Length: 294
Length: 255
Image (cartoon, rainbow over all chains, first blue to last red; front, side, top):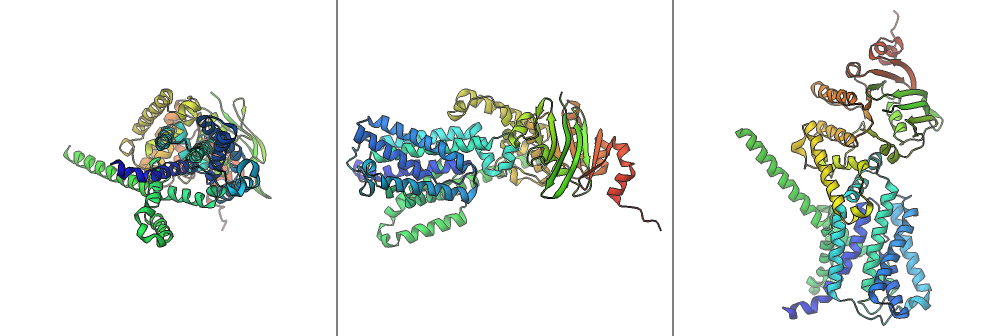
């Protein structure tokens, strides 16, 4: 058994990290905002953790914790200007944030290694830690979604003016969603840095942003399992289609188009919605037949 | 019990005067009617009260609170609930969830308790859901509790919207054409519910075209026409007022 799992452990790492990023992205979608700042928050967490461990000799756990905090603070700071924007304007502004961060990483060579990257980071994060971090994050977001914050997010996503007319302060929940998004991305960025030996600025550029968005669209953006499903599909697919490696990008694009056309809420969320509809239909039939007998 | 008072409230959109400055008082324990032909500015008045539009002039006072410049969520937190002329539910959420979100202003648990699902937060959610079930019973909607609100029929969606407004346990309830598109029997049932709410001490503002419904239900009626307040008084006084008849039916043509 171990001989089967061991060579695939890097895939598990990728799934856990990717799911962390996808959860960070999904939480802003759930609050009805269209920010794509996740990879920027991840870059902050990653470089913060790496620099503190390598240059300052911090304990890795403390460094990752501070990376998480930095992500959270960046989320809070970004929330103020972004809460004033809507829809595609928010997406563009947050994309600018990511690009500015990448440019700054390239510029401050002394601190970050610049275009050459930041290297010889100790690999201290084990796969099990990533699994634990992912599961804890999912559990926290699940609990949060069940309570008052989840209800406020849900109202803001579906109809912002109605949410306000029920007493939900939109700015407050924008800030909460950005802070959470920042903290989660900062955490997984830090973990990513301490398992990968090296960091480069490009790692947090446009391509990871697209991969994260794709995972959320593919898996589902309303549940906590959806992002995990999306990332798992995107990570495993290239392995399954290895014989077709040269068509990989084409298959990947085709899959996204098919999912958006036929499973608009993502693979996992659509299945859940269909199951709910069938359950309600069964209940209605049962209620009707018991009514007829009475 | 506090009344909602509008003092010299008016609204201009650019140069266009939508509502000329007028006074209005929405008293607790009463159903206040606001009627007028299409385009008279009735919905604009609701949007002014609830903070959707900014006042061009005048003040809105609720007890000792000045709501003239309050944003929407603060108006709601002060205890004003509304329904919409065109139904606005959260279509993906279930009926119960739609009602529970209306209880937002009664939340007392801390943000941290909510974030980590502490017992206090879970107990509060359970209490809200139980209260929502009571409202569902009152409106005869129990069997639809777990259906997505968007899947219900028009009349049932109206009920959900009404339940959501009542979930706020408002002091002032603003109903924007609540029986539009609902048959007479159902409208009468809803009318009885509105009457019961007013008897419990709620201040109800009813916006309606349906004159019969208004005259039967309202204690005091304001009439708007083209943004002007043209009459006010008891329902009987208002319907026999020549200006009101002219606004509704047009001028008699002398042959």
